[in-house]
Structures are given as C-alpha cells and as structure tokens.
Image 1 (cartoon, rainbow, N blue to C red):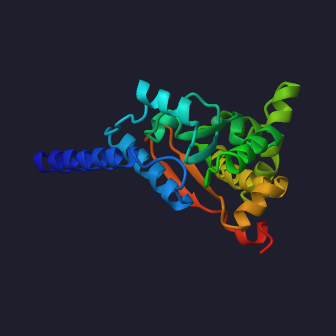
Image 2 (cartoon, rainbow, N blue to C red; image 1 turned 30 degrees about the horizontal axis):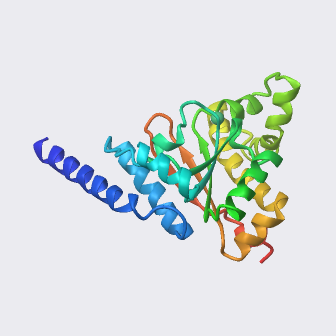
Image 3 (cartoon, helix red, strand yellow; image 1 turned 120 degrees about the vertical axis):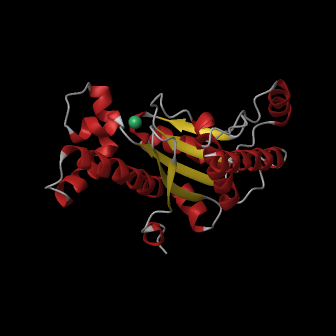
Length: 237
Ligand SMILES: [Zn+2]
C-alpha cells in the first residue's frame, strides 16, 4: 500500500512538472499530435487527481486579452454538464476552442465554428468527444417524443442510430445506446468532412487533424479512438 502511494505521488509530481513545462509553450505553432498529447496528459492528470489547473489567473487573462486567443485544440462535445472540458483536460483560459451542443452533432453552426477555429485561429486539432450516458443519443435510440426544435437538433444522430440498430438487432437497450454513442462520434466526423469543403481540404493538406474520443463520465477517463477508420476515403484520397 505504501509503495503504491509513493508511486502515485511520484506520477502526480511528474504530471505537475510536465504541465508547468508546457504552460509556457502552449498556443499556436503546435502540431496536431503535440496538441493531442497535451489533451491526453491533461486528462491523465485529472484522472489521477493531479490537476494543476493551468492558465486560470489574472496574468493569463491579460495575456490573452492583449495577445488574442491561440487555442491549441477545438473540441466538439456534448452540452452535458458532466463533461466540463477545461476540467476534464486540465486546461485553462485560451486553451480550448469549445463547441458544445447536445449530442455533439456536427451541423451548420458547429461546423461554421470549427471552420473559424481552423482557418482564423490556426487550431491544428479537432476532437469529436462523445460521452457515456448521453441523453441526446439515448432519446434517439428510444425514439422518445421531443419538441420540433430538439427533433431538428438531434436529426444528425439518426443515421448513426439506424445503422447500429440494423447491424446489432439482437443487442439489448444498453448495448444499443453504447454502440450508438460511438457510431455518433464517427457520424459527426464524416459530417464534418462531407459538409465542410474547407475542413476537408485542410485535413487532406495535413493542416488539421480530426480525431474521435469517448469520455467516461464516471471514471473521468477519455478513450482515444484516433482518426476515422475511413479517413482516406472521406478525404477523397
Ligand atoms: Zn450528451
């Protein structure tokens, strides 16, 4: 037990040191993989209860006011209150270009926002982050009655759910929901490429990378899926 505690403490210290080292080097100029590494490390600190909560002081506010914002990652995630991005990835002011909407769908407003992040802010990485127990996906799987506005909002989730239901007809409800949450992540990525000539072209040119990930709201862990399995086809390569 004592040895475990010591190892955990050492790991936490290492994470803290890495975060301090990175705090001064954030912003533009990072590659997509370097940006991904920062998110992975931040989430590991969060899960290990070793968050350093960087970039949350007055100096950072002044710096980003005077120098503008240079976020290193765009994250399309659900509006769910259990998915607070800056906490989950242990980041702060000016770090994450956040696009949050029920069911992390990629429709016109979300795609326009992501285009702004990529083209005007030079953000090299887009993460489509689904999460466990997603109410929006669950509503579509259960075909729950919704208002007209919510129906329009969740309509991009429908193809993913239909595909899962036809492929896994014998699965129970919980399995259908979990598979649909994952399928909806891939759906959003393919929608980004299909509906945004700009992001498709930037991805094909290696200027932006789009990856999928799933956040476990209970463990706090982010499971990284990488790029879409059919990324080459989607980019017309
Ligand atoms: Zn959700």
